[in-house]
Image (cartoon, rainbow, N blue to C red; front, side, top):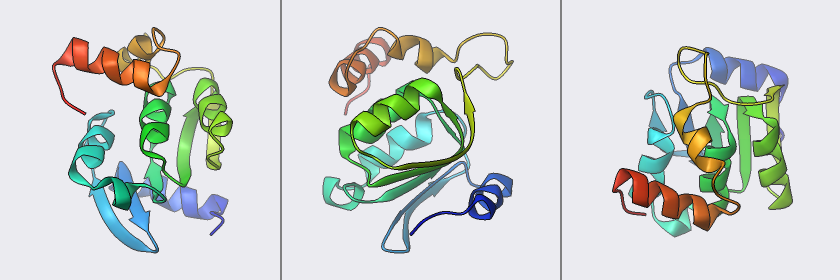
Length: 141
């Protein structure tokens, strides 16, 4: 289903930072900020559930794009996306609907690059980014 501008505006105004759906059923949602909810969803849901699911995320940057392609989401809907994220998603043939395109994703103070975005600059692939996250944050994938 194609998302309209009003669908994305409604999502952006709502309480959820991320919503993952499959065949119009909500599989996961969170109101936490940052990339943590996406990481949590990927670990909480099975690969079968995630593969082919549609994701709504308030902000999608390069780091999120790497995670999204690593589990093969079917479509991305976001109010704000970075140019590098669009390139990564489109090169993996994942359709993207967005309201605003930005050059980069900034930290909460809007003064510097988001820490996960900065980390993602040291990776050329989704697998490379996941290895960096594991090494720097002692998490599993």
